Structures are given as structure tokens and as C-alpha cells.
Length: 487
Image 1 (cartoon, rainbow, N blue to C red):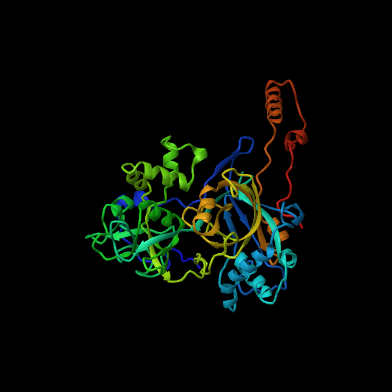
Image 2 (image 1 turned 45 degrees about the horizontal axis):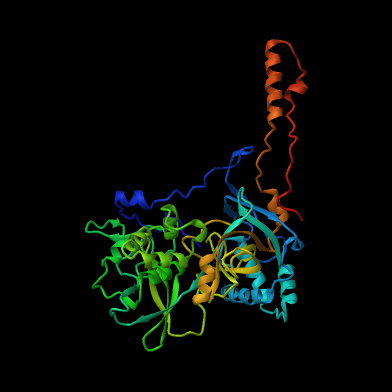
């Protein structure tokens, strides 16, 4: 459970320059959705209460399900294109892996209603033994309701891809292997977190203490590449080039094949506190690479062709990732933020506003078979990971596996897609609809003009109306809209 700032957290001295850079406005903002709606409140508060008779522990239904800037719309299973053709047995196996932490808890210990609902579903999944995709599909249909999810005002979400790089490396530096991967420095601190303990992925004040015991920014990518950490014995291993190091930082994990053939597994441990900046966007903005050609392979080619400019490009992304050793084996996939191994083509990284283990059905056309977004992608994925760049209710990073083939596909994916979130049936949809605010209908321009004309005539004494007509609200002739929740 997240702890409030005022609860058990001492005041941390912070330099003014650091405040200006790192403090972010977390308040929900109002945005323009469409001109005819004007500016509406871009926050939706859903009250997902457990129905009577469902024993999910204390506080179920007592906490709101908050998804800022989000719209939800229930749909039918038959409305999901490709649902019946998907291999839900593969999804069920990935879901079973996500259920391990839920089944380890005797009672729900999270105040979010979705967590409590998944806790109950996972207990039923323990005894389920689907033999094929059809049986697995039946399990999901009997235990979940499909709800289309998107940012308020948007029809689709956004998809990217990630993978686990496999690179050559060495325990010792030499002319061939000269780029280090660093472990977490001991002077890297996060306000409110114990030194050496769990490190926040985002949202915390990160830096180092100066001589005045104030937190100041940590070294950025450019400074680290220029040798800011030299001589501190933080190197895990050395690899061939800076593009590989940048790629590993973006992906969050890697398999480094050492000189004797030993596979060294490294995974994300901490970051330096600077926000991630896409180097591909910098190339596009500078008209160095056309937008339609952008991919990780294209970035690699540009860096190789421009060795003098490449350090400046990398330095534009001031974020830097530190790693930890997770094993010396090739046997399993990397571990995601949920603490379980990822499943290629079934695991996704999502915003931390979602509960790990939540299933999402993704509908898109992606550049899988070639560089053109022509391959239909209709697949049930399980939320098992996150990332600092994964922000929003309908935003996902698709995990493709390890190696160059997975990397080529992952590097091409930057496309829209439709998201359907599977909510446990323990959540009372009808009750949720009673508490869901909807924007007030806005009268058509003709109605407004008619009212102005009526008021002008009244002022001139050319028209009089009875009290009932004057006080009656104007009728909206536009579409009233469909109900967000339906039984």
C-alpha cells in the first residue's frame, strides 16, 4: 500500500534547482476533448463495490477505483474482433504465473478493488485445468467482464514493444569490450526510501547528498559516459558499444554472454532520476531520420555512421539505468516488476495505476511480419511489468522475448491499438454506473442562438412568455450517448 508523504516521512532538504527540475504536478488536469464539449473534468471516479455475499476481506467496495483521464465502456465478448481465434490457453498459463503472489496472500492486502477481485479469481484458477484454448476462453468469460478502456476523448491507446537483448561481453575491459554496465551506486538515494532497499521506478525525488546534506541531481548520462563513475568499482561487466548499453537501458534487462560462454543475466536496479527522453524523437525533430523510417535498427545505423555526433545524441537522454545480476543461466525469461518471469508475446508492461495480473485484450495491426503495420494482432495479454515511459490507462509495452529476432519486431512497434480490460466479475458494474459522472450535454448552436434571440425580444418588449416557458430547461437535440455501464 502506498504511504502518504506526511506519514512517517521526514523532511528532506532539497536544493532549489532540484525542486525546479524534479517536482511534477500530480494533480489531475482539465483537457479539451472536443470543441462541442469544451473543457470537461479529465478525471473519472468509479466506485467498484463487491456484490453482497462475496467475501473479499475488509475494505472491499470502500475504496474508489481511480483512473485519471479515463473512459470505460462495457462490451460483449462477441464484439471483440479475434477473441474466438486467440490462443487463450497461452494467456491462461501467463495468468496462472501472475496468480502466484495472490495465492500467497491469505487475505487481500491491497485497498484497490481490482486487486481484491483478482485475488478471488486466482483462487478459482488454482483448481482450473483447461486442456485447450476453448476451455481457457470459457474460464476468462466466466470470471471476467470485458470493458473497453481509453484515455478520455481517445478511441485507441498506444503500443510499443520491448525485448531482452543478448549481447557479447567480458568480465574485464579491453579494446573490444570497453563500455561498462554499472550496478547501483551507494550514494544514489530516493527520498522516503531506505538506502540499499527497494528503489522507486518513478514518482520519487532521486539524487545524491552534497556537502550541505541537500539532495542534488545525480550524474546524467553524458557525465557518466564521460567517466563520472570511473574508479568506484561499480562495473558488472563490459560490452562492445554504447548503442548496446543504451538498448539494454531502454529494455531494462539483458543476457550478456561472457568470454567463456557463461550467460550473465542483468536486470533493472535503479535510475538516476532524470526523465527518459527518446533519442529517436531527437533524430526526427532534427530531420536526421524520417519519422516513417524510425526504429531501433535505424538509430543504431545512424550512430555507427556518425560516431562524433552519437555521444551528443545519447546525452540528450539524460536518464541512466543501473543494473543487478539476477542469474547465470539461459533457462528462463527475465523477471518483470510483478516479480515473476515474463511470457513472450503474452506479457505487457503497463502504467502502475493498473494492478499486476490484470488481463488486457489488445486489438491492433502491427509490423510483425515486415515493416508495414499489416499483421492483425488480436491477443489476450497479462499485465506483469511496468516502465517509467509507460504512462496512461491505455498504454502498453508488448514483451516479445529475447534475441535479435524479437528485437527487430519490438523496435518497429509504435502504433495505436484498442484496449479491452478484463475486470473480475466480483466488481459490481451496476453499482459502479450509479456513481460515474458524465459530462452535461451541451446545447446545439441553433438552440443557443434561439435563446439569445428570445431574450433580445423580451428586452425590447416584443415578446412575452409565461413563467413555465421561461423556466423550462432547453432540450438538447443531440445524441444522448450510451450508458457507460450496462448489465
